[in-house]
Each structure stands twice: as structure tokens, then as C-alpha cells.
Image 1 (cartoon, one colour):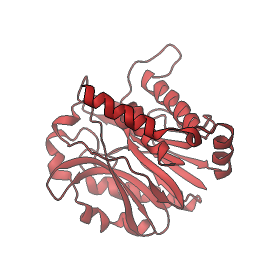
Image 2 (spheres, rainbow, N blue to C red; image 1 turned 90 degrees about the vertical axis):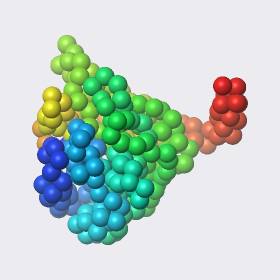
Image 3 (cartoon, helix red, strand yellow; image 1 turned 30 degrees about the horizontal axis):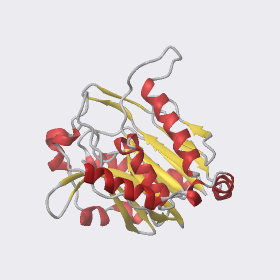
Image 4 (cartoon, rainbow, N blue to C red; image 1 turned 120 degrees about the horizontal axis):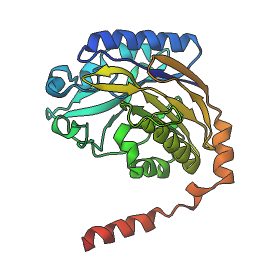
Length: 279
């Protein structure tokens, strides 16, 4: 299966312009034979939305009736936007479309509100980590800070996810003597570790561009189920990565390292309950 990762530059607050470019990239990916197309966190709105968060939010019904549904008849697509729930709570969400319909929505669970980040002031936190099937592959979609908490990857792992889709808007930080940004290096380390320990493909889509002093670093990548980086984008410019994902490698990785088989979910559950009771 061929998967496209789009390293995307968003226009802050301009949903229509970002949607148009998203559709163009998806069309190009489909022409290249890709079956799934992954975009970065909040690619349809821009990241640093702050006081305009409510103005650019879309409801599930609006996103279901958008051109994204139509193009997903050609190519499955995973995008990021601000979602407004029926209760008028705003979420940083990933929307997954396939076969002409919205098949899954993930609301970002962990909202960074420290250092240069202020998400908790403007969006609510999601409460679920669920898997879904896309092109017949059990998958998980997680958003940026979610992946800095390995509990989200663990929950994806024990539900049997074979593809982990990571949507990110990670600003460049900590330039190293090696010529690589520290945040890009850590993300790659995380991808190598998570893919190897879960026996899954790990697809990381980061954005590029500048917003109010945030310089997004790019360096999107993919890892195979043995923890090997098999594709990597350059920093700072828009780009499309095409990855041939071989499902037989998932089988081989999980047979050689049968961590899912040997996992003891009930032990984790009982200890979490004990820790909560004791606290």
C-alpha cells in the first residue's frame, strides 16, 4: 500500500485557501498511486489560531459535507482542523475520510500549555484513544503532544493498530551542532522507538511555514515496523513523501518480537486502579 505524507504550509485563519491546497495535494498523491494521504495538525486552519479559534471552527456535519468527502472516493485522507462539538466545545481534531465519508475523528487529548504553547486556553481536551479501519488496515491517528505521552501509543498498540498516523505542528527548537533541530531529532527517535515496540508503521506529518514567530521545522518521516526510517522530508519547505507500506513486514515484526501477544492488559488495569485508589 502506498501512503503519502504531505509536509504542508498553512495560511493562518484561511480555511478555504488551505482546503483548496489540501485538495490539490490529495489529487497529486492519488495520481502518484497513493491510497492514503496524511496531512499535519491543523493544516486546514493554521496552528496559532488563539482568539480566532471559534471563528474558524467547523462542525462534524460541515466537515462531512465538505469536498474532502468527495475526494476520499479517490484517496483516503487525514486532515487537521478546529472542531466545534454539539455542546459548542472547541477541539483540535483529526478527521479521517475514506470511500466518500467521514470514518473517524480524533480529538487531541493532551494540550500543551507551557513554554511557547497555549493550547489549553483555547481548546478542550479529547477523552478517547480509538482505532479505526482505513483501507482495511486497523489504524490510530494521534496529534502532536499526544505522542509525547506514551500512554496514547500504548492504547493504540493494545487495540492492535498497525498504522500509527501522527499529525504535528512542531516549531523548530534547539539547533544542534550536527545541523539538525533538536525537536526534529527527538521526533525521529520517538518514531523509531514506537514503530519497533508496536510492530507498526509510523507516519509523521509535520508542517512548515511561519506564524507569529513560530517557525515550523518540517522533517516529516515514516518508519517501518522494525524501527527503520524509510522516508524523510527536508526541513522548512513543502514536500510530498511517498511510502510503500508492506503489510508482510508487520507480520514479520510481530512474530519476531511478540510483545502484543504477551501483553498483560489486566495487570496494567489493576495497577492503574490501585494507584488511583491510593492517591
